[in-house]
Image 1 (cartoon, rainbow, N blue to C red):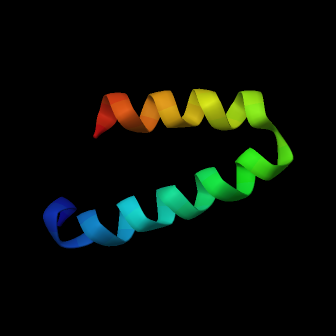
Image 2: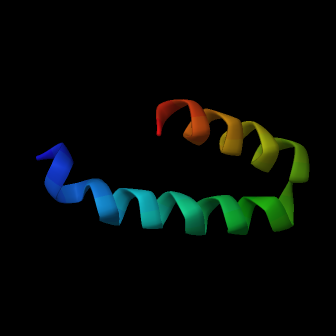
Length: 39
């Protein structure tokens, strides 16, 4: 299940990071670090 939704989840995370980065840069940086650690 995780493998099937992998690409979609990753793409959604990228979009979310881009959106959040425009709203709150510090939070976006933390999210990027989190995604980097998970991915």
